[in-house]
Image 1 (cartoon, helix red, strand yellow):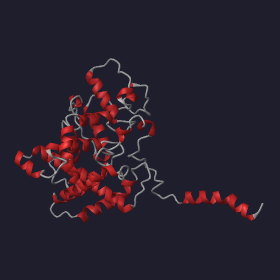
Image 2 (cartoon, helix red, strand yellow):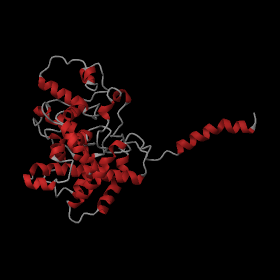
Image 3 (cartoon, one colour):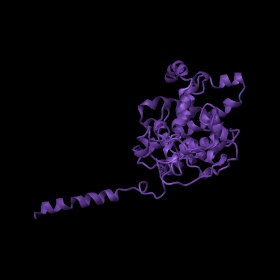
Length: 332
């Protein structure tokens, strides 16, 4: 055997060693990720149920060109968020995000192909957008008619003629792949918005999704408010986890810790499209509502998405709204 052949025979060993040694501490961190990609075996049953319609939050759908228009809105919401706190500067927010960036990146199950500076900018924009969205929603409920009109003038997300946009935003905020860590929201809220908010961050969030034409409506609303919901902020992983925890705490349904879903069972079949599900066995309407909503909110211990429950409100009384307001929204 020639010397050249011996070197070639060992080249794979050198390559493997280089790849092993190149693993960074970030790639080998031992903490379990809390924001995961939906497994293909589940996604394939209904691809659209896991894709954002108008808004990207976090890195997984960030490069989707169809969602880029909302990125411009995020900068406007960042400016509005800064203006709530006299003396608050962008540098203050940047410094806080810099402290959180490494821990936030570790929360994602997939390798994120973006530079550190891009990830930090995304985290700042997305977190401030979500916080400002919730704060505006709370103001919208409390402000008198004329003052409300002036406050939201030019804001197509909250315009009365384009409520379908807000429904889309609410739905997209609860997709499993469209999340940022909740602790990022907590730190920014406590540092820069707590004094200006009439309620806590958890209450802001729940109030936003309890608005009738967003998520917790009709059948779902009938099972709310039976018990109180006072979780530790540090126990919440992201917005979807918060809403699932709220549902579990305020209903009579006790949480379970199931393995991967069995698609032949009523619980597992709720992850499938409606047309593929088996008919439920005899049960009261309230039990069915509670069970179905819980199944739509959870996958193991972490929810994956609201599927048809989130999509249904988007299909009602919205064609005229979309036709009238979409050109203004895209231009703004």
